[in-house]
Image: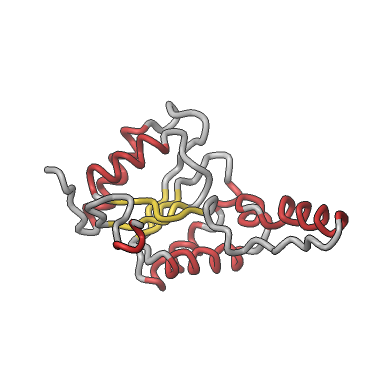
Length: 170
């Protein structure tokens, strides 16, 4: 019903963000802060994006097992993004930014994903081409003390305000 009425998850939605990588250890608190402070939402992420999943052929048990295996080995977001070409990763980013009308891209850069960090320069170029700013961080999915929520909030606030996105609750 809310979709039909044009009502989003955040009543004062101002900024739509794409989140690239696995969730941050403080994702719930960070998301609530984004919404409350900036009217910002994470409208999609590499973990939520399923447009690239290969359909599973359900005509036989063997074809179903093959399809499930292929999804697990080639289609799942983290595997797809880190084992495929940088071009495939960038095409996924372009799709998400355009399809979800994103205002920015946030790359949390889980410290264990150094293979993905090699793509940040390419990602920056694609974001410039698309006209959306990129915030690249280095966080940890399991250790909130490594880069605490306060540090991530500070970096995000600086990034948002550099774009002219002021807090909604001043």
